[in-house]
Length: 79
Image (cartoon, rainbow, N blue to C red; front, side):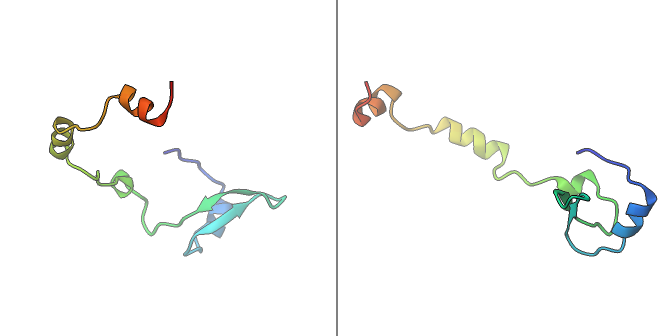
């Protein structure tokens, strides 16, 4: 994640926001979304739990099923 240091005047405007805010330039073009945090975010705040454990993934790899590509293409009529 990148970090940008802003001027104190902009910081003063942003510190009073308490909900998501769209940021626009002087021509009205959207440049980003500001999402205020109560505290400075930590890396853990952005970590997502994996949908499966390593053991579950390895078990799925062992139990592969399916058809060979040639058979699938033949059934689809692809030559």
